[in-house]
Image 1: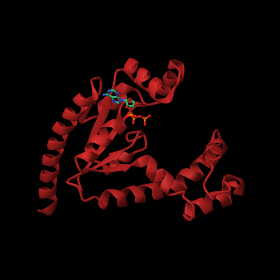
Image 2 (image 1 turned 60 degrees about the horizontal axis):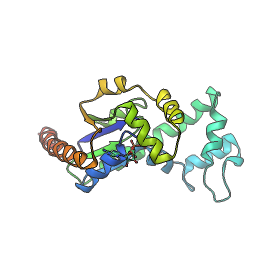
Image 3 (image 1 turned 60 degrees about the vertical axis):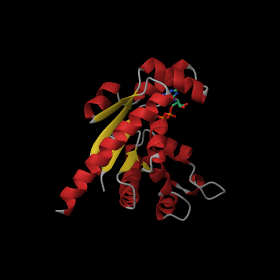
Length: 205
Ligand code: ATP
């Protein structure tokens, strides 16, 4: 299966872009969903977490208190490593299964941490959604009712634009209208269909 990895900073337009690929019939696999799915009630990882961190982390409805878990591992590298060792293989396996089950011509893996979390091991190509910082701040302020300072603080801790762009095979500069985005996505979609067809040919030889 030909996998296009897609990433971008906060509010760069990942959802706007993936919605458009999805309407063209492309299966979207979301790395954030994978990381939540493996700790859902009934999953073995949730019990392992409760055994290790204490049952106070499980809320009355049986779901994981993710905020409390984040607090517990903050500044405690032993606990953080324990958690990563538990969850990384599970998230990887879940993601892989989702990618493999796709029936579209290619599949798109969306992850804010595509590059940082090593998720590029799943991908054949990297698409970066890029946006000038001022516009990024404006869009997130509007969407999340945040102040410019709050948005800037988030951008500050994320991977830099430059670093992300260095990894990109393709870049969508999302500084135009949503209609302009439709056209950009349609063009890329045609390219990805061709690349996927080529790839599938080499795989079947
Ligand atoms: P996050 O990283 O926070 O998950 P994201 O990368 O998925 O964000 P979106 O939610 O798609 O980003 O976009 C951020 C905001 O900007 C949304 O409100 C979206 O509707 C708006 N937006 C995205 N692209 C455009 C565009 N080309 N023109 C106008 N508004 C846009």
